[in-house]
Length: 369
Image (cartoon, rainbow, N blue to C red; front, side, top):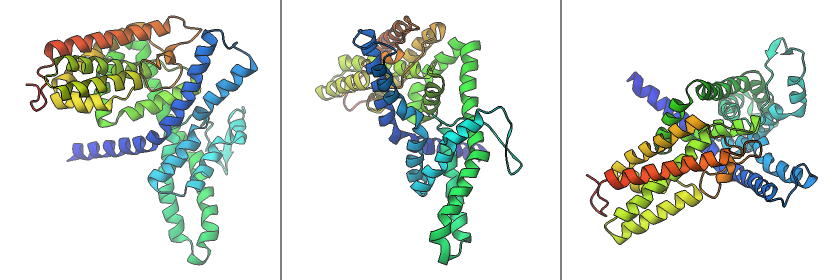
């Protein structure tokens, strides 16, 4: 019973994170695509690096990540059903330039004698989600205590004040510690056991998509890209997943016994390779026929081993797919894109061959034995 409770809590947490994160992915991708355009223009010589034009385009691409807490405040407030304007206001206190200036000072900070932890919340995800979740209880408590006659007048004041202080004094630092722990553990694995770490991570990516746990890692990757400008494995793992699933889908296309299944397999393959949308292949082929899920996991693991050996860094957030492979391009690391493409080629070849050899039958009405 205890284990079941733990599973339920984990599932609930993941559901909350995914519900808050999913709506903001389009604008994060849009910003990433702007940065990809800058990369393409500078690589082809159509845009000179360091010019005002390049700076303006870059800041447009960076804006969705920098102001991510405000977008997340909106989506989280909708999800948790709290006052959206007050939620944005409370997050605004954490994002205030004045607080950023205070955090950058050498002096130790206090509020009414309570230590105020220095932190920067630009690009943050977990602290914002935790704060908006806490606002559910804050709003309920304030409305319950406040007399009806003055509820509409004074409740917004109290909710904004209490929520902002909770964010700055408790929830924000706690969320920062959690985020730093996730990023730190990934960095530790990258240093001490990169081959094993990224082999396991890549191998579990299909299962992450099925369970929704990938949103935890996506949030970590976005935070890392925003704060330090480079992410050293998570996005490469999802790029490997997309290409590996393409290999599975095209093997299924060749082995399919009916025109309907051939159409399904082809559309799944093109969708995941060109758009990075993995769900059709996972749910339409891998889970339906079982064995392709195993071959996808093995294909990802093989490519993940290579990724861990050579280290593939990501510099821009985008849906991992063939057209967005320039997310791995960077002038200071010219060989990184080639490493990513090799990892993708290994993933495609391994999953394709394994599915061809061990994927079983692909009939319309008969699941693989």
